[in-house]
View 1 (cartoon, rainbow, N blue to C red):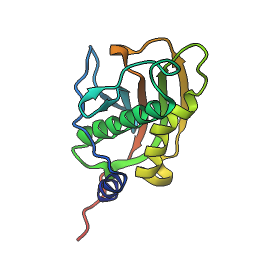
View 2: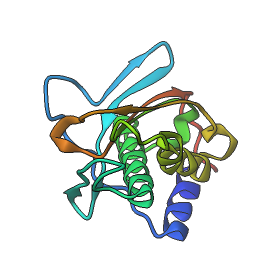
View 3: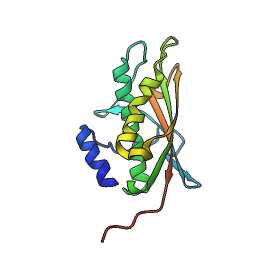
View 4: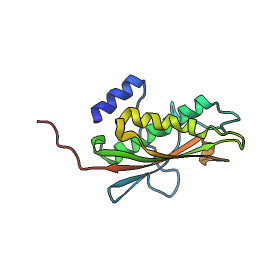
Length: 161
């Protein structure tokens, strides 16, 4: 699966970033009962945090790209936690998408599709997930979007002979 993910990223013209260090008193990933709980990830593009508010300074398309960047950071955190073995990802269970948006902006689900569609592209049917997409008045560091995840993992797959 790790090779498939690398090929898919290349086909999409995307690359996994280095997993970001926490910006406060938490850990990026916690494992409990076969599930990985990935802390909220912020959108970085070209090394810069995507900031602003949907319905004001950020377009729907830029919001979707920001959500996709959050999804890439989630996969980067998974890769780091799993020592590079993304084949252990059994299922993307749920994404929580928080959109920094004005009170009259109602396209949070469309913004969230940036992360959701990435998970399906990378993990196939195992990337289909439950999801929340909510508007909030502000996010840490002024980020436009933040996404967290719950991911089911399995045992490491044996290497081919």
